[in-house]
Length: 94
Length: 538
Image (tube, rainbow over all chains, first blue to last red; front, side, top):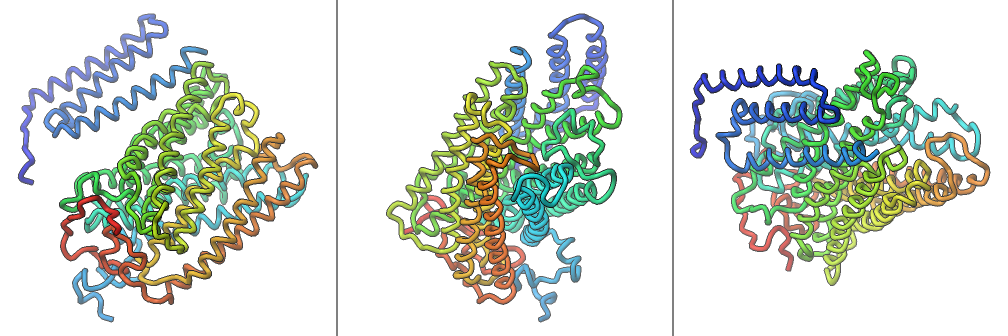
């Protein structure tokens, strides 16, 4: 395809992302030792979100894709966040 | 006929030999049209199983007390009826059959974006169906939870749940693969000149549907895996005895299963949006409003799942929120109905079988939709929850909406799919008998529900007897109509008169190719020049 561009990402970047993912994994285990009450879930979800955005951005090449692909993924993320919020209309007000 | 020596576009897709012979040339074919027919035949077979189970239920309810089965058998029958009808027929129904067959032709493409993935979807579908059926044939008794697999019963019952749960999980994969295929096909393979606002409405609804299939199905997949893990290992996600929350199961299940209602109904609406302008010979009224309402239904429909759980012990805030959102989704649905009616207004209406089905669709869909508002309102929901009223409501929507549209679509596209015409008189008689039976079968359930008859019981009080007799008689009349329709279609597919290219004077691209279409649909990808979109009638 003539309009496709190939981006060569240096291995160093992949290695750094991998390292960050490993560190965040340990962090998400470590955070369970801290008593955060109802914020435990928020903390776990936050760390998981950062990790998945890194995977999407670098390993799945979203950073180098066309904008409409990014819009689609953004839309999916927005739907997911909305579903979580609406679910908590039940859990937070029981 | 030496079809194999000819080029793919010299012969129709039905005659083309390819490299396989006999059954193999069908079950290994990557042609979107053959895959569409594979789905059609598989679904028709499963549908007849589902209908037989439905008839058995209605026969049981012809009189109070035990008639032909025990309570436990009745539980199994309504569970398997629901699982077959929902997961194997109405959810994949129109996208898998007519979406596969018509989508590429309607957008001017030779096939879907990923033909092999498309074939894999059908194989996965069959694998899922076999798993579900095996839960009935083997093990410790058929599943008896209802098609919703509600926790905690689904991991506590001694019946054969695991194959049914795993089967539904596998069927979900088929749905995801089809959705993915359609999204890519619609984005990348539209004919030159076919902009988004010139795309016919059936592909538009398939597009909205495909997004729901892609986003919502994984949720139920994971949920069903959690139920299986709960059953096998007792992990404690849903089990209150282990600190789990059964209401969480209901949230997760309905996060998928309510949008799944829109997976069912959106393509049904799309088919109706094709039939009505063709048989009114008039430009569709409010094309952009129909497109916008399709996307609005797909989006808002994602956030109304909690209305299945008003009596489950949800918070008041959640109840109000879900009730309001439920009312919102009625708006785009009503927009469509107004647009269909306005399309017919002052049109040159051609009273053919597909039009009768489309008109019938609007009638039963309105009853189903308006009764949906009755159960979507908090106060009335508490009264009507788990009564026969709900059964009537969703059969009017799911069977009335999707079923009428499916039969309308098959009578509309039949000449294109099989290259032959059907007997219109018998088709119309079939429609009339089916519709009469349908109304007699499900209308009494509204009354029964309002009088307090609960659903999913094999027995009832004597005061409910008369309405139940009417309902059972309705099931027999409807089945008679169904038999007439199916015999007429099967006979016509073999020996009906040869169909012309465009028997209904339609304007969308499928009516520009021969009936039945050649293997690759078009000799050359068509340039799309229509100025005002796909429905330019004089």
